[in-house]
Length: 365
Image (cartoon, rainbow, N blue to C red):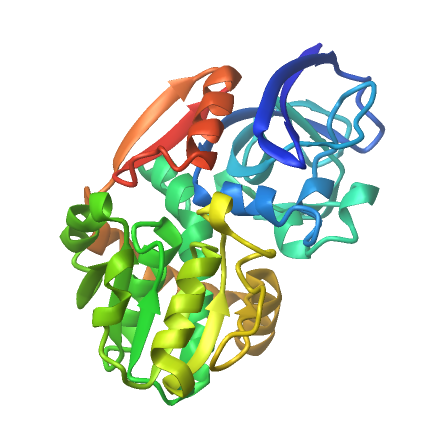
């Protein structure tokens, strides 16, 4: 069976090619998934940018004669079981979870239960277990066939925003009265702004974005104030926390210099502006105020579910998710594209920062 993958050069993220390879016979106990759909968002660009440091490149090894220096960018989406050597997992089942930018994926289901399973493939075990969980849609209470696109586009990004707000609220927002979100048009920033609006109404939400995205960001209604990146000097100098989704070292430095000691916490989350990310996620150099701290959502989710349990924790996240969907409404237009070549092209546009934030891209490889 011919399988396709998009291979990206780890040291040159704008170099991505579509390749074909013959799939190996299915291993005992394994299941072969045919990738049905996934979304391409800024989140996937972050996976690529920090791929080596956080082992994102290790989830899906490239099928290549010489894989050195190559990687497959992870996606979130839906897949169907087309072959099964695993008792209890039937051909035809559909699942939701972490998938490669590819047409197929072999997994080894373990901890199988009615609602899902964990991929026990050996090379995936060193990474966070959050990414190895697959939901079986037939028994998934959150699954809505009419909202599959929204789940792929917003779901993982929203949950990152959800857990950031939960963390900040648990720390009483470090004594700050406002939060500044860079890359305010990104879906993760929108998720955080939505949850903060719901659960931390006393915190002023300020969005920073490019001039071309001002109208879109304001139209979401998720922010109390919206400024362009050139207007940092106009921000009120009061006790503040920043959440940097952009990874722009220069912007981060200007924020630290503007607020100085009144900056109570500097949170680094993503890297949507990779050409200006500086060292890592923009944390290079000596900055006034607190040291920028990287936020790794999977670790926080482990702690969250340990505290609240899967049922109560799931209800908390679901309530905020419904509020988010109601808030964003039709703010984002969903576009569907067929074929893995479309995934490659969309990925390259996203790396170059050329995708309209008012669009949600779904690929059906």
